[in-house]
Structure formats: C-alpha cells, structure tokens
Length: 512
Image (cartoon, rainbow, N blue to C red; front, side):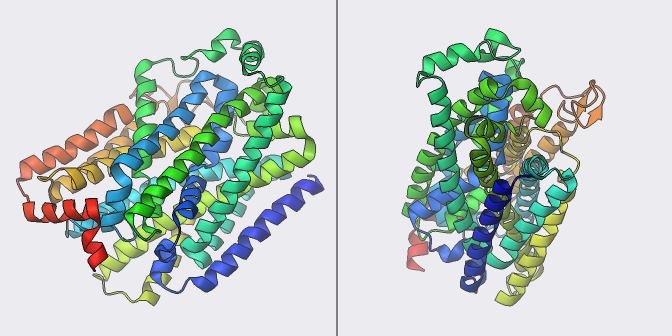
C-alpha cells in the first residue's frame, strides 16, 4: 500500500461525498430523487450517460479482454458503441415523451394493467442486479490489488459507498458523480493511450506488428476466433451487446432527467461521441497491456484480466499514474453502481410500492422512504451475489446483463411504440418470455458449467452450448410478445393512436 494511492483514493471519496452532501440539500421531492427534477441540460445528461455506460466492464474488463484475446476482446468495444445507434434512432425520443420515472411509466401510457407494471419492475430489478454484480467484482479485484485486503471486504467497502450516494443524494448526486467521473476517466484514457503510442514511436502500424509477438498466441492474436471459436456464439454475443443498451434500466432512466425529447436526443449525441472516443482508445490500453505488462502478469493479478489497465498505468507512468488510474476506476465503479441502485430502487419504490401496493396514492414522504429502503435491499442483494463471482471477467458479466435487457425490455418497448395491435397480454408475455428464457439458458450454459475446474461456477458439461444466449432468447422475447398479442385478440386502436402522437411529438406532455 503506497501513500499516493491512499491520498488519491481519499480525494475521490471526499469529492463524491461532497457532491452527495450538496445534492442531498437539493433533493426535496420524489421527482428530484428519481430524475433530478428533469433539469439537466443536454450536454450534462450526455456526459452523465457516458459516465453511466463507461463502467468497470468498459474500463477494466475490455482492456483485459483485448490484452488476453486480441481481436476477440475488441468485440465488446464495437458492440457497446454501435448499441447507441439503436438507442438514438428507436428508443430515446419515444421513451422520453411517454415516460416519467421508469420503463413501467412508459408502458402505462398504453397499458393500465397492474401486471404490466409489475413485470416491468421485475425485469428492471433483475437486470440492475446482474449489472451491479459485474461492477462489484471489478471493484473488489481493484481494491484487493491496491490495499492487499480480502476480496469480500473490498466488495463491502464499495457497497457501503454506493448505498450512501443513493440514500442521500438520489439522481442529482448520481448524475454529478457520473459527470466528474466521466471527465476523469477520459483524461486517464487519453494519457495512457498517448504513452502507449509514444512507446511505439507514434506508429500504429508498428504497434500492430509488435503485438503479434508479445503473447503466447503469436500472429493469431490479431485474428478472430481466439476466444470465440464458434461463429454462432460470436453472433449471439454481438446481438446482446448491440441490442442490450436500449433495454438497460439505468440508461433508460437518464432520458427522464431532461425537459423534453429534443434535449434527450442531444444527450444521446453527446454520449455517443464521448463513448466512441473512449472505445477506440481501449485498443491502445489492451495492446499496451499485452506488450508492456505481459500476459502472465495480467493473469497473476486477476484470472479474468480485470487489472490490465491499472497495471499498464503503473508500467508506463509509475506509482503516480497507477494511483490516478486506480482512483478513477474506483470512481467509475461507484458512479455506475449508484445509478444501478437507483434504477432498481425506483422499480421497487415507485412501481411496486407507489403504484401497485398504494395504487398511486403514496405521499412524497412515503415514496422517498420506500425508495431508500429499496436502495438498501438492492445493494445488499447485489453484494451477496458478487461474493460468488470473484473470478469472472466483468465484461463477460455485463454481456449477460445486456442479454437479459435485450431479451426482456427491448421487445416490449418497440412493440409498444411501433405495433398498433400490441396489447396487455403481449406485453407481459414478451417480458416474461425474454426474462425466463435468458435466465434459464444462462444457468445451463458454459458460463455456469465447465468440465474444467475453475473455468466456471460448477464442474460439469453444459446443456446449452452458447456462452451468451441472446441468439435464442432475444427472438423468443419478440415471439412471446407476438404470440401473446395474436392469441389473446385484445386491442385498443384508439389508445395506440394517442401513444403514437405523443411518442413522436410529446404533444400531450407539452400541453399538460
């Protein structure tokens, strides 16, 4: 443990706590708590979206995946970036015009049934917890490396911190922590990328030539098929990454923090530029780690490769850069898990408690109290599950959350906005089919079972061959919605006409 690391860590912690203290004074109503009062500007929300999206998977997991598997590791960067085109073109504007706090609010614009809201809340909580596990695994590995403390203590430290942010600061604190973190993260990425390029004499061609010889894979390092040997498995992964973002609850919530759809669109454009630059730079981090840290050292620090970026910073910039990058990684994790806790808590408190149990009659004080209890519950559940996933790559863990989001939420969003015959039964069947199929297929896949001890959670032959089941579960989600609608023969064409106008113009919202 060195003094520089401790000082920078404490600086990050005090800065984020100061933001939370300030935000707590601004958070007076449930609207403030859930959506920062809808008062964020486009550029602020865009950077906050980028902060939400550039998680431990992006910073720690992708750098490690590229360092260990070359071309195949870069699949994550490509998929995560392209995903924002789906969000921009199909989801951002209708969601902002139709919703208020959560995905369930958006669905209520068309369906009043309690079962639709309850199912949407269930999917939100499930996806949020899966995503949180990935962040906590990354945090645990990072703090364990830096301070030489047991993994479980490291996970508890992060868990307590993230809970404090949400309990007291709500969306205002979460947004500003994400903005600060995104700026620091981009600065760190640019610095490391510059140092890597300097080592290669600012010659990208030379970099590609040299990395062919620095790993045990040789020239195959730059070819596809090193990690993803099955074409169907690769396609399945890309489906999850490209379609999953449009169904992630903590990203969807961000479109309710701005005043109108125009601002929501500008938010996505700002986020896409920021995220695009970031993911291009992950290539330099991964190749740099392979060349200047070494495959053996990366695996020794963490079997999932999650410590490649901090180790590269230490190799190129010494203790100071190592401490800065580690502190930024810590801030990255704290910001993202705070957003995830908030999305899960909003589903509990607003949807299940406020709208279903209290039938929309809960007072502001009751909703705020329920949200804080829900935040605590979600945090504890995610921490407990993260303790059993220590040795899994965080980028892989996030890809599973993307799979569930793409299978569960995306079909119901698109059907609600674009299919006039879609009905209540179809909405529930779409979400349940996508959720159950993705969870069941993951539970019997190589992600959970492997004949090699230590390669997965359990020893044994997997029943389902694909590591990521999106190739099957996403079509099943759409099929479930289609069959539920066609077989039930319910329809409300007048309600769809109203939804179509509001989704595209926001007219009723502006006039209300």
